[in-house]
Amino acid sequence: MNVPDRVEQVVREALSLAAPDIGRVEGGTRLASELGLDSAQVMDMIMEIEDRLDISIPVASIAGARTLDELCDTVRRVVSET
Amino acid sequence: MSLFDKFAPLAELRAALAARGRVPSVATPMDAVQSATAAIIDGRKVLLAGTNNYLGLTFAPETRAAAIKAIEQLGTGTTGSRMASGNYAGHRQLERAFADAFGWPAAIVFSTGYQANLGAISALAGAGEYLLVDADAHASIHDACRLSNATTIRFRHNDPENLSRRLERLGEDARRTLVVVESLYSVLGDRAPLREFVEVKEKYGAMIIVDEAHSFGIYGPRGLGICAELGLLDRVDFIVGTFSKSLGGVGGFCVSRHPELELLRLASRPYIFTASPPPPVIAATQAALGRLLAGDDLRERLWRHIHRFHAAVKQLGYRTGSSDPGPVTALVFGEREQAMRAWQGLLDAGIYTNLMVPPSTPAGLNIVRISLSAAHSDEDIGRMIEVLAGLAAQLKPAAA
Image 1 (spheres, one colour):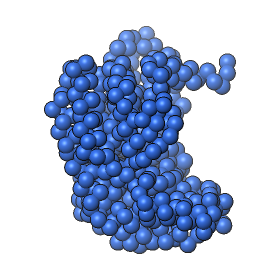
Image 2 (cartoon, one colour):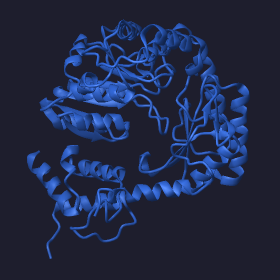
Image 3 (cartoon, helix red, strand yellow):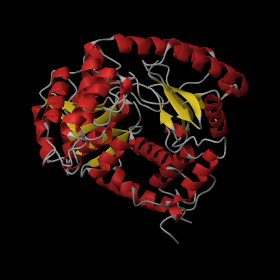
Image 4 (tube, chains in turn green, red):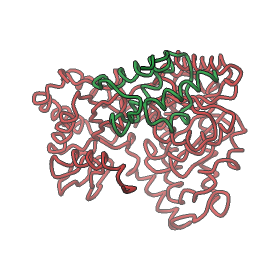
């Protein structure tokens, strides 16, 4: 089993804050269609990630991130470019 | 699989909202509108407390007369863009009037308020530049960001410190950044900390555009808005506004202390590729603007209603979206069902308001939004308070 890196930890923490009732989420789970997160919840989650990692995530970069894993990849990319 | 599959959650939401009562709470059909504060809904006369007709100018004698005269002289529409056959004297006079009112050199009129944000923001920030946008900004602002080629980053609602951290991270690029905020947020009725935002943008050399859609006509000297009220007109860069609220028409404007705003006419796609506002709309807006600037009587009347209503609502135990009294009062409920009951209860008592539920509301709140107008009578306000008092006993709003 892979050990979650700092980014994944932060993304999962942000997800649990945005949607407290959601239990364990697999990396391939779709945030909107499977977890039912609306756009406002996703944006809350993104801003929480930004604050915790001290990065700014362009809105356009999130558009393609539908799953938890894809969101983590997007955040890692932003972190590496910062 | 169908293109329509993705709309299934919206269909469920519509069905849930339509399940109660005979009249839908979304896109409520109005059979007739009789005045700035009265309409016929489902065959019954209702008091309108869910419009943006803050000064009641839709039925003012001077605005109606101006619109009728313009139709007779100039026809019903321009059938052309401002860049082609739709650049009438009235459009240019109205722009001059807005610029003069603010004491600024430049103003542009757009065909809708939505397009004012779309046209100004998308043209001001382009490729290689940045838009830092309040997370709770209106859809027209977020859509403007999508139309722009700039990099868009959101910051936490009404949080100057959060904005500051994002500008700090941009380094030198902060100087190529447009900060976008509203002065008064229409869902909860909360005001932005504009002075603090201006201080932050100046610290980093950014520019700021302030949407005064819900505050123009109501706040500040001559109703010029919250930037003017706070004495910030020499420090904010751009102000956008709409004709469809205090001015009682349809359209929008952008004014600036930078004369370069004029260049947007050549770069703003929502300005260039659409028909210009029709003559009656321009004429009515010019008359409404004159009325709005001429005296404080309508504003004073509206503010008297606001203070009375806000105090009563708090006394009844309702939770509101903002502690600041304003033209919009958002009654906040913990559950959608409670908000729906409140909305239906108000309508059953003959008062039309707005029901707003997630995902179109901030923080997942369920809201009944009540908007006041200078055209309301003291008796109208009393009736609203009376009905809310009756509903409070049923809804136990303090526990919401």
